[in-house]
Length: 578
Image (cartoon, rainbow, N blue to C red; front, top):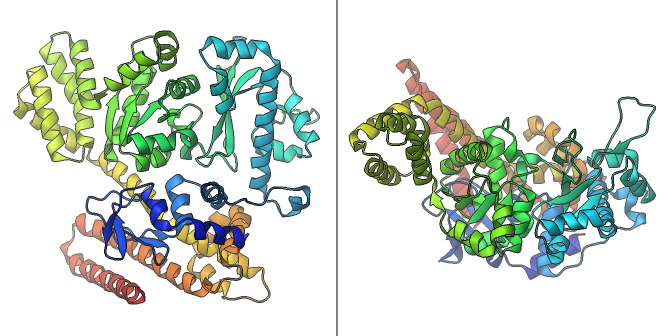
């Protein structure tokens, strides 16, 4: 496999790869740009073509083309390998029965999902009612094929029987989220999806990881939509439906469109808006999801473009979802607009009944979230100035509080004042009160953003190091001592145990017959040490900020000084190596 990695590296230079994701400017022998892994105004992200690597002096993110794609696209190593192999025109090893013993649990589940997708696609070809339903919604044959839409037969065990015929075990079928065991253990396992039009959900490399099934004939008992449960390959908080097909268009057009349903997404793509993603079937629609998971869910979309149009239904549920999403997106520094969807009409209806031109106008006329909300509030107040003032304070000013730019805040304060008749001074006073009331909520959001950014920096280093340690541990002739890594990552090791096979595969792919193993381990340990120091510094700064007893100030400042000295040593040693 190392030959595949070497072939890919020889055909894709890091500068052209990263330039296709973010804007870079020449800076001596390197190129620099704004780091995609943390929020910054001054570029501190450098790409070195000679070294085949990148490094951010602002947050410490570093790596090669594989690491970059993994973190930017939110993929595991094999997903990044597939994506880069496709880009480089390198053929990867195809699965064969002889490889079964070496195949990991996750690889088997990916194959189960692919076979299930083919099964559903074939069912659709033979079942006219499902075809007629899709045609009635305005879907063309090409669109149905492109999105691999299928049908789950209304039968308890058709899919299970089919997958068993392909030599998959009941455990593998259940782990993939395609079947359930009855409470009565004497009875056979049964299909999770039955009598439903099936929409496959893919990761950003195009691998099928989950399904969302729409019931064809409503029996009054079953949910309209049924989604895959979380599995070893499907984390609801790390994917948006359609991201694999939308990402290039989002990057090219510099904005994304977020809709709720599968039909909304598929018809929007069919109408030419291929920069559309959907939240249905993912964690975006889960009201209990944590802020960190919601931020993570936005990850790739936010990294591709800071501009987004929310095109949810105009009903209460749609507005609530838009509000929840907008608060996080504004906190991430995104420019959030809202499409004016008519009440009682969803995006799919707009496209299928009024045509693609009508949808184009809806997107073109989308408004920034603040004026959009102001318009709704003033309409609801019906000329009652007092009611408008209360609604603006309770429902609009909290979103102004999420804006990062003071200039933007001032602009919208003037806009609200002009349209509502409320004096700017009064609005600013209420905004200060809101800022005070929501101080802890804002801090929680900021901390969640920082924690997600930390994971983007630290996870790839820990993952690569543990992969090397697991790999070397299993070898007789070791190049390095795995105990050195395990000691450093003692607390982290357990959380990666279920990914051990994948991590070994990644390490072997990079370092089998390589002379760079020790050098790379030393550099990664250095980067990890730097990250730990940053975390320690952050904790001490928080202590200093919240200090009540001034007698502790000298000790804290002393610790901060020591940490900065240790960071400077790492920085200098890194500069000497360049």
